[in-house]
Length: 167
Figure: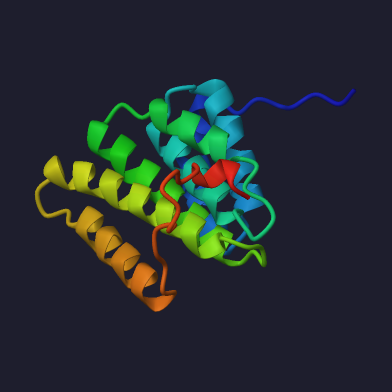
């Protein structure tokens, strides 16, 4: 079987730049591959972890959010508490957006729960945000607008199911 070729430690900064570049070109698969190569050499590289989380969530779509668990686990590897909450919020928000593309019953209720989960995480991040960083507030507001625009609401049932079990 063909083996992967390892990166040199010296090439990691350029690889991170390329990962960001490919993500901006809407090529999350390439970004994921680069980040996995970096993490093979430097398992705690925070930039690679962040780009990998974002590339994974870029690939959430109507029928596939199979990497949801991996993205959440990657957040646990982030050393900055603010970033752990903020990027967990991003995962929840993007999961809600992906759910909205499904043509199944209850998607509005399920998406609402994802958005509310995201908002709770953004609130936690906001409490510890770095100075001059209002990203958590921007994301919170985007969630509120999403809930309003798509007319999302909580399930009318008293025993609401977790979003990922209800699809």
